[in-house]
Length: 403
Picture 1 (cartoon, rainbow, N blue to C red):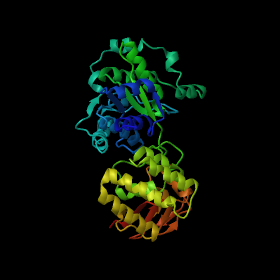
Picture 2 (cartoon, rainbow, N blue to C red):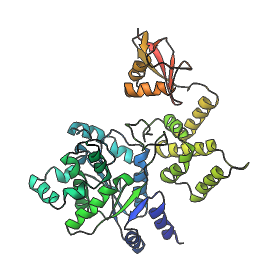
Picture 3 (cartoon, rainbow, N blue to C red):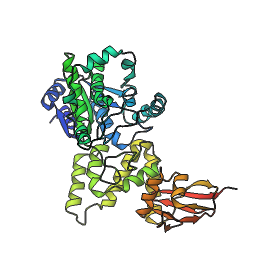
Picture 4 (cartoon, one colour):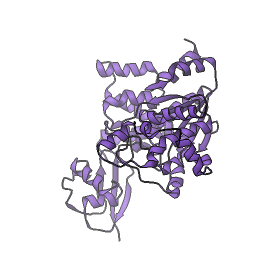
């Protein structure tokens, strides 16, 4: 196989769940057509995580093959909220919230994409100047019956949960982005398939060639079960501290390693096959799961923080979790109370984002105070200067009594 053939094959297969229309897209790639490849991300949170990196890396592969990466920041559609995978309506974001969330998106996407060569667009460019007659004309091309076919809506209807008209509009409005930017291909997670197919339908209604679509598998988070999500607390942020990122990746279940290597690194398929063999038929020559995970953690940290940071993170992890020591640098937090409930303390020190998360952490035995497991979520602790509070295997803070 020629180098071009290998590149095309990797584009179409590595970390890919489905391609529609595979035959059509492969033909265009082999013909040497320069394609406009679209990826849209709504800034509904202030930062990106490794789940976003899966599709961003695929977009980068298209860039490296000479195609135009069209990165759409959905500052308009974020105000509506994508219903994909949702059991209830998303809260509507204000313009200020969206703008705040957008601040880091381009910077973090730039850790993966070549932003100098990418075409960065904001869908408010075309939507904020559209009139009500445009919305009427666009939505008249589609029926409610077809829009309600999506699994998310069917589930909500069965459970008698509300579906807003805005949510019904969302796939159509997102699909129109493909008309505005002239997309040849659109990328997304498997949960975005309905929206991506809608983009094809909208283009057809405007007598344009239909984009091909490519979906990537959703990446499970550190719990190994649910889709990586900040709201679920199982995410690994692209801008997280190198040591925190390394330790979080080390905490993923062994079964996820192959998927992480395929979706998040450039490791050769031959090496990944060796990982599969070591997992299925371990021998004296095999690398242990821990060693493979160290390689994975180092590689991912290197991508986002550099070689030096990856080496330091690995050394720190080995020192803390191999020798059972505390990290060499622990953040210090001042506390005004000399006695405080453990749940309140976790929230106050930002070791938990909410009281419900703090209670869950305590119930799961994931909280230690000076090395002792905190077992009673209703219990108070007597705060002492220098007391170390630990959550999971990765997060430590040192308490200081406020004078």
